[in-house]
Length: 417
Image (tube, rainbow, N blue to C red; front, side, top):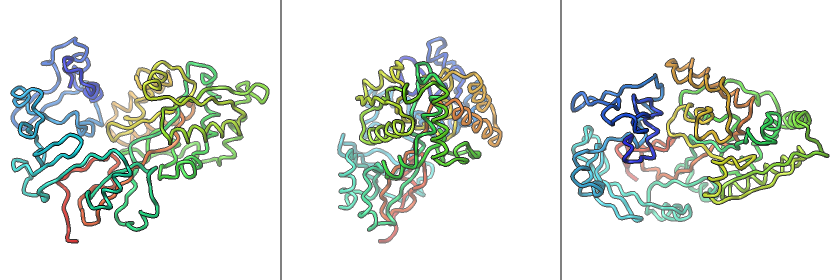
């Protein structure tokens, strides 16, 4: 992961975890042998951290931390992943893989809890199109499938209420304000734009697919976070709109000097619908003149990284289930801080939270950070993502309410049907 020779896209996870010397090894400043990871014996791994990392154990559940067999890689090179060569430590072993068609697993008799593995065979079928996923499920070709909420078919779902699940994800869709470029370099403008967004309309009328209103960056389903009463709890949308008009007036904008800005979003039907709706809100409520800029991913990525935007649509999907996976993004030095938000107080709050072992105390830091994001408005959270599942009622052991979207075949079993 951290060996610079491998150019791993997940190298930063080792730094995020705080593993000793990880960053220096990635930068080629120290040899790989200096990494703070040591095998004490065949069953004990010692990891030395540079500072406390309350989320460390959660982070190690990410697949980039999964162990691989060094001898197999040394022996087979690029072919170590074939069914005949792959050696893993999970409850199942790979027995067949046909690219674009299927992946077949069978129980691993060497697994430590093999006696409790019930299924004798599991086949994964890659399906890209949501419509095909539905067809395969109702035809009985698959017993579990996932789909994006915008493809909900309410009439069909009414026929199988005990097989459908809509689960919140560790993901937030939000707007980024360029804090270094007029007119969004003015906090009053950013605040006006933020509070005038009617999120209920966005989620219930524009999208209407199960997404949840977002007034904070941190999703409601995240672990180890208890939100305190917030600013939005005390006002209705009409009051918020009036506050927005006052803020914009104080910033020097009026009907004779309207706010003008561009709103960049990447090519997606949902992103387009949201952008059109919010631009309409800003026009109607604030008299703002919004230029919508729909870009393909490559161009969008360039605009995002270069700062060529006033407002930018973005999505944050957490790598691990802890509030810092969101709040770290807005730290001054973070590469994902596309707002170029620079605030030493915020940075110190997050740094203190990272060092705090007590969950309640850490929660206070996270709430303070959220309040700062609301006050300075470098971003405007809009909605939290959801994901739909169809699961046959006779398939049990599936963790349907898991926002991390992780399941293990080892826990699954079939009842009589």
